[in-house]
Length: 485
Image 1 (cartoon, rainbow, N blue to C red):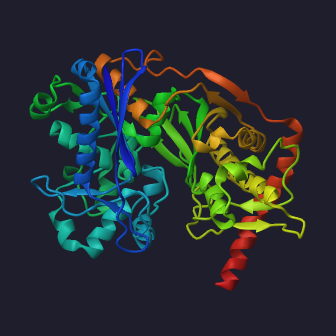
Image 2: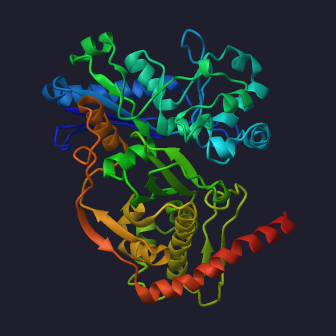
């Protein structure tokens, strides 16, 4: 038996699987986010432990015999969070989360201090960990002075489980302190933030043993002192669950935000197009991500302003044979890849008196698809081959949206058979890898495919023309918005 723990922003998920990776049990515990000021987003690390305790207690109660045969634990979690500890491992302040924007002013300052683009392989953005620490240094200097260790969120759970300060490569790459090519902390990037290597956790690969379950917890839960795997950041762990470990086929996550994930065999950054370039959760492998900020959230927004439920709006989009006459820019919360513009704004263009709600719903789907097409182009500019992708996330349940997506991006989209291939499942697979030493396809197998959605040639040609308009619209809208500000 293998246990995967995934620390999400809104909750913790615990998944217990057997040696064939069939699901034995799943448990959840809810979490809340504190927003004490506009643009801030924080959580109390103590709540993570309470949530993990509750989820594990559920599995112990419902599956005691299976839990007694546990062989290893794997971890995944939301990335970029800043968990600050003093010399006695006491939490100094609430964790500053990935979606906290307070450190925007510190990004340009950090960029000027060291070669973050070349060494870390990523643009300095407020979502990453390093600018958060510079914000703390400048705004809470007494906290910064007492900081003995900086841990990522899932690694604070690891500290509770094992007593060890350890991070793994995929999550550490999202701090901006890792030399992503060398898979080691960069002293130059740490110094630019006023930190040293002594304040960083020890590094392991995600498939390696990071420590063992503390005897106190093992005795309380009635399980052995099993190894705890390095694990992975949430997207890398998801990729492990889907077997996306080699170039060619990635995954496309159509959730509130959107991610296009592709594995690479070498470090190949593309900071010019705001591509995220990180280590993968297994050795000698990297990955790239194109990230868009309003994927299914675009449909949620349209639902809110029209009073129509999202399923009803999606149902208005039937068998798509031609593009909507309306163009939609999905930049409702700014945009990352390829714009790197937190102030980007969305728009409907081409509205007429005859425009109906079905036109708007289809345009919203198309706008998100065009944003994913931007991500495909950005990854390919970095030399990353991607021809197909597993389609996951809530939006992937819409066959019309997948048909639009395939034709707009040129990707063949693969629909997995029913199953849970999320980050907790990937964490469980990393637990198996650490227990067995096996990182082959036997562990990281790809899911069976229920259906393929291939680009429609006629629709793809029409979307190629619409993509030209999409590409031209953003800079013009940005200039007009600036005039009206």
